[in-house]
Image (cartoon, rainbow, N blue to C red):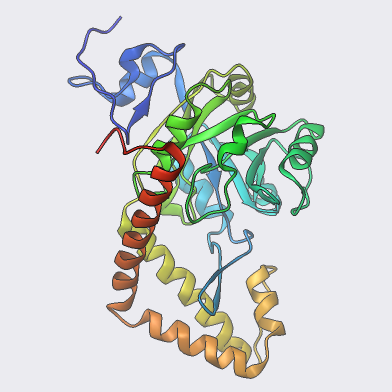
Length: 337
């Protein structure tokens, strides 16, 4: 046993009973070496590609992500992840493509499925699962494929989330650390409200760009995706990571807006983009006046310092909303600052 003083940090590692306590962020010992000593590997359970559909901000519709599967795979391999779960919204297309490209990282086919009750992650899928069903029906469909059902960001104030319904569902795990939720309240609410549940506790980056991959991850014993599956079923997982830096979110937003601008511009000069993404399809069906208005909005956003200002303001709004939501859900203030 390693003898060291340790401290649990909200943004680093959460211990579980089967992992020795000193795997948490130790003072005076290298974190990578601790993982190696205990044969723990990293898996990012929540990542999006360019096939993840659309998101809407005000009157503009943006691609949810413009990340090519190849770029996400390369980043995961560079960061030495053992397993990468591709979880596009309501589609397994990105995961299927990523599987053909991976060498040193193993790809799990997944999807973030919108249910009538909130988002659900389905992992180890073999086919798309339709959105718009109840959470119970969606979980049954996931399990029918031999998959695992995970509740992502269960207490988010700005994403579709299951909330307290996680206590009623036949879930396999719950995401207790989501790196994209920088507010400090969403993850703590999940940790506080899930502490007594018989579920695997996991982490995921919720990456929408290559730079975000691996910012949060799940720790498990073993090497392979099958080892990860067994660890989740046995409730022998933990999570670790850091919140995604605001600069990475701002840069991701700039890239997404620039891609929308490109698709709109090419469509207006009758050179439509046919890359198989939902964004290109939607733009192809827009009226000319709608394309012009959207192009003007995207142009305005891309002019500095608009991206930075919008990023800082959005971060502040999310934090404020999450603080209110946290107090409502937990009936109390944060326990960490």
